[in-house]
Amino acid sequence: MRLPRSPAGWTMAVFGVLAIVLGIVGLVSPDTLLRMLGFEVLGDRAAGDYTKTFMAASSMASLNMGVYYLVAVATEWRPFYLFTVIFRLVTFTVFTILVLTEAAPARFFGVAAWEGLGAVATGVALWFERNRRTSVPSNT
Picture (tube, rainbow, N blue to C red):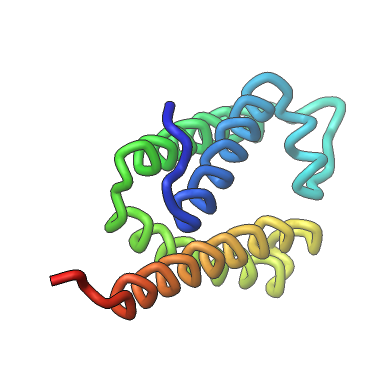
């Protein structure tokens, strides 16, 4: 695996690695991840409670997404970088609404903030990189 070649690539790589790590945590110890997100961990679950199934599915999706991010970094797939900025801002909005409407605990706003700050960091890095390229005089 090659190191990122740009500031935007570094923002993507950090998110990718953390998504993989948290995906693994959720698969190995869903209760740990539930606690991290601010959800109550129950000793016994009622019949028909699929929290652990949902945690496994979400954790696997997180692991996969982390791999996608690292592949994008390794190939310097810049259109994907921009795509993530847009959809991470959508995710920030949806997760914030969940907290504001009390459908999720206040601590869950940390997930929203992570998505929003990550999107802004990647977006700003992309903007600076583009402006730096256009402001550098050509040698021709």
